[in-house]
Image (cartoon, rainbow, N blue to C red; front, side):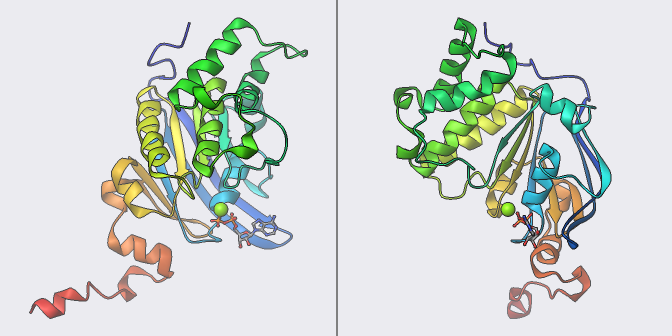
Length: 264
Ligand SMILES: Nc1ncnc2c1ncn2[C@@H]1O[C@H](COP(=O)(O)OP(=O)(O)O)[C@@H](O)[C@H]1O
Ligand SMILES: [Mg+2]
């Protein structure tokens, strides 16, 4: 049986807690004193220029890189423990898979079940049902036997989303999921994110497209090596804050809209 609709909801449970994170690559600072806190059942946009540290933050939350300072908790657990519990699914910016590798869509999604299988990794009927259900949700069941390398960018992104669904992760980290995808995939992903939120999952999405933030992100984190502003989209996603994030200028140095003078 599939999980009930609100399977991931836990009252006011904190899904992601990060505090005072510092990450450097051989002395070059990528993140400094960065922090955020996300409850269950929300969609948060992560917005910043190229090189602002978005992918670095995702990798730290996944435990791929170790911050030099700071604390991370996922569902109240240290990163390694949350990983063991398969709590977090990650869709990287470039999928990090060799696309000439002869693995099918079905196999990639089945990888989401590995954490709950025994060492021999022999799928049970429940695993096959979970994979089928996940592929249906991303509208890819008809392509299940296709090698991953033969898919379009959008289909590949949907495959990785299906893997996250099959994994039953409560936290989804999506690094630029809309890059290079077709309109159909974009719409489907936006719908899925809203459903995931209603199921009580927490979704952190980095994006360059500011309209996505306005359309479906409840919260937004603006970053440039540190968290510049963070909170409800309606309060934080202001022209001043956006200009600060992309222009690197403090708000008092940003001139108002050019049209205001023209209107006089
Ligand atoms: N593996 C790495 N080695 C050295 N520097 C890196 C590495 N990965 C990222 N950086 C640097 O860290 C900073 C943040 O990068 P990144 O997190 O990829 O930013 P974003 O995803 O926002 O574009 C950049 O200055 C980038 O050049
Ligand atoms: Mg990046």
